[in-house]
Image (cartoon, rainbow, N blue to C red; front, side, top):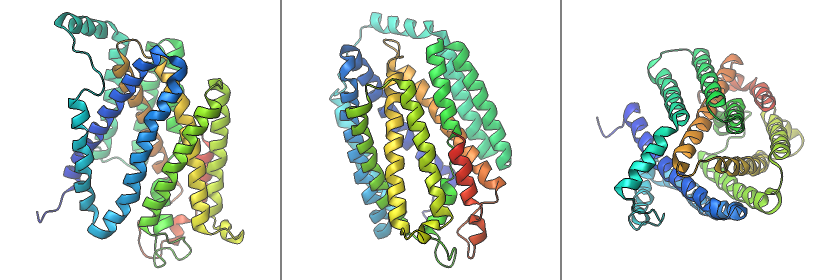
Length: 367
């Protein structure tokens, strides 16, 4: 009542928003995978073109959201989101994706091709059930943080084994790698938010960033840095073999995560490095690395998509990767719980950040 939205309603709305984004993303990926078959050598250039638009939108939305929240409150952001959500209807109606109108016979043949891929259908079912289990555990399970993580590990094991057993070795092995990579990226973002934004009353020793700076300024810097990472990949790294490239980039990611320990121990102030400068530099480094890791993953995945099943395969692989990252979120929560890092924005909660550096150290070394 009173115009307020409860947690269930808000979650459902965000589910619909994410579903629209996911559908558009997957259909776009399927379309440029088809284009890749015509000219494989130009695929990194096509990816760059696509991501220029993505980063342009990301920069605009990130830069404006903080100001909108400050000026009009959090609900106003939802109203501003209506416009881009509606604008996508025009290019869809105009068939900018160049979809062909299929005859009844062609549709029947396509369906027959899909149902003939029994392994893919089983993987879709298994991955979907795994995602539903994780969602139900959170909302209806009433389990502890550690129990949630144990369930997530079981789901990860089942999905990983399914990919390895039901796919060709070269496809199954690659997807298991990215699944495990996502699961090993233990997220401590929840504690980091309070570390950086707590007030002097809540955490006297902290950086005391405003929500606007932490969300908008670092977000814009991150988006620009991600764009730089994409350009670097397209110009210098697209000819590298995947194995050495992933080894080098993951090693650099470990180093980047270890550097965060400096700010969590407040040693950056001893070195004379202001909090804002340190965080912006760290954000730039991380986003460049994340984009350099993402680009070869997408290029590699595109090469495995069977002709005519690009959207289905991309949806399956993206779902599996997201499941791996979700397990990483559960793992990060469990790690923070074990180490007693449970900030809530309460007054005098400095003790909650005592072991945050240790959490960052473990999260950095796990990958």
